[in-house]
Image 1: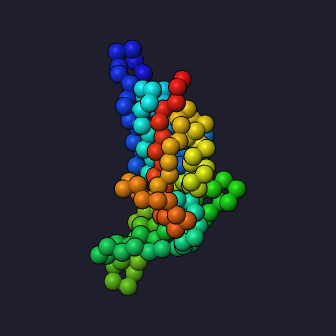
Image 2: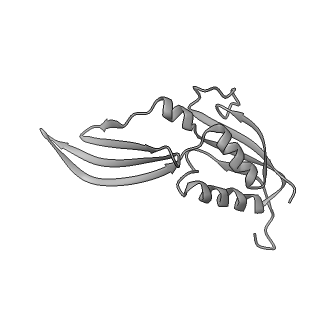
Image 3: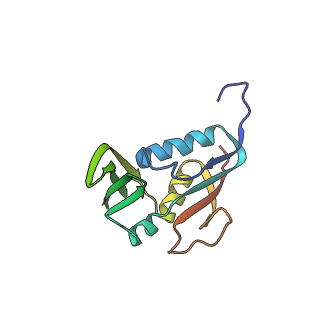
Length: 154
């Protein structure tokens, strides 16, 4: 943070804003956020629940919109809790399905206890876990994890 900048009162990570650079990348992101947050600042994280993904895992899926189709091919690496997805963008032309592009992603997923420990190791004091931003109770069937934390003393 620059000398003339004020520290942040809150850090908010919504959707799937974690996981793209692996666990170490997330640790660096949360540690960096802690460095620019004032003491007692609030951290709000909302992300997909690894446990829900595993209970509802689908290796393939197809989504359609008009003549377009998105084909997803998923693999889960249990040693790193990484979900790898290959996307194929297709366009239907009569009976022919033409591939127009492909992309791949890798996303580190977290179970609630893993996210708690990661945030704690990054200079934040975890406060609570929830199933939604409405602060509903977290359950094994919760699709989303919401973690609330406060900035610890530095």
